[in-house]
Image 1 (cartoon, one colour):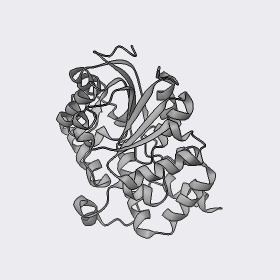
Image 2 (cartoon, rainbow, N blue to C red; image 1 turned 180 degrees about the vertical axis):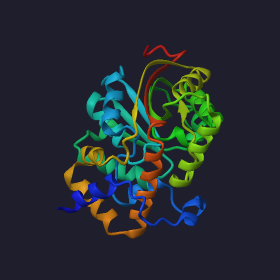
Image 3 (cartoon, rainbow, N blue to C red; image 1 turned 45 degrees about the vertical axis):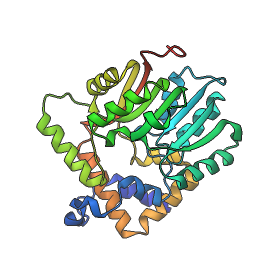
Length: 291
C-alpha cells in the first residue's frame, strides 16, 4: 500500500483508540489553528465544500470578463484564481497575511493566469468598509472565513461590504439543524472551537439568510451539503495525486500533526449530521450591476 493509501486508511478510521492529549487539546490559545496545521502539511484548499462547492458557486455568478471581483480573506487565493480563469474577470485577492498573497500570485502564474487579471491587496476584513472606501466590485467572494466571527461581526462585515460589492458569493459552514436546541448548538460550537483552536460560529440556513438580509443582501440561491474538508476522496480531488501524496506523507511522518488531524476529524465526524457547508449567491439591495 502506498503512503496515500495509508493516509486514507488512517483518516477513514474512527481512531478512538489513538492517544490524544486532551489537556493540550483544550488549551486552544497555545497551539496553531487547524487551518495553519493544514497549510503546514501542504493543503491548499481549505473550504468546507471543497473545490466542487467553489466551482458550483462560481457557476451561479453573473460575473463576466468585463467585471471585477474581490476575494476576502483569500489565503493562497485558489478560489479567486479559479474565478479569474473561469470568467476572464479581474480579481483582487485580499488577505492580512502578505506571505499568503505572495503564494497566491505564484499559484496564479503557475496556472497560466494573465497577470493583468490578478491583483493583491492587504486587507483586514473587520475594516472592510474603510479599506474599500475608494473601491467598488461587481462580485465579492468569501469562503471559509465568516464562520469564525460572531453573528454581530458577520453582520457588520457584510453590511459594510454591501456598499462595495453588488453580488456576493458565500461558501461557509452551516448548522444543518434548526435553532430549536440552543444548548446543543452551543455544545457543538465549544467542541469544534477546541478542535480547531479558533472561534467557531456557524449559522443555520435561516440564520445565514437573516444576517445577509439585515446587512443589505438578498439571497437568490443557496445549497447545503456535508462537510468535506477532511474527506480523503475530496483531498485527492482538490489537491491532485502528487500534492495529496505529499500531504499524506507529511501527516504520516509527524506524530503531533497526525494526532491533531485525527482529533479534529473525530470532532467533525461526531457532529457530521449537524454540520455541513452552505453555498449562497446574494445580491445587494442597492446593487444595479447584477440582479
